[in-house]
Amino acid sequence: MKTGLIISVLVSLMVCQSVIASELVPSKSPIASYADVDQATIKDFEFSVKNERIYFHWTVSENQAADKFELQSSVDGVSFNSMALVFGTDLSENNNYKISVKKNSQPRTYRIRIIQKDGSEQLHPLSLTVK
Image (cartoon, rainbow, N blue to C red; front, top):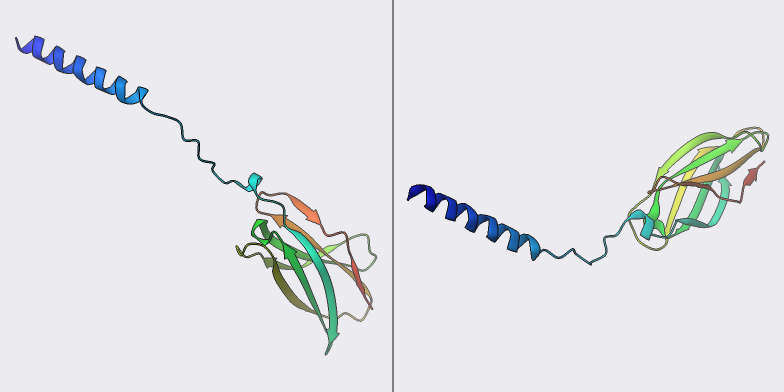
């Protein structure tokens, strides 16, 4: 009798579990990923010079997609080195950034590399030469 009771309880549990499993429906709600977000782009990239410092400022659209910005400089306009790293914010839409560096005695060309949160990178097409 005990064996029959144990078997019927086990069968009941298996039936309940299979019914519950068959009632599961995959979620159709979208899960946001970095692939769903547009890439951050720089809209304006400008500079001003004051008291032997160069002040760079730029505006970013789709700001929430940007992880960081790397300011690069070059003496010859071909080979660039990293000067500074500016971390992005999670603010959506547009955002403004600025940074200053010490002015060098020789002319230099500056550009910005955007590192997106999805890991991709882009160079801003505009380079600025400071004399």
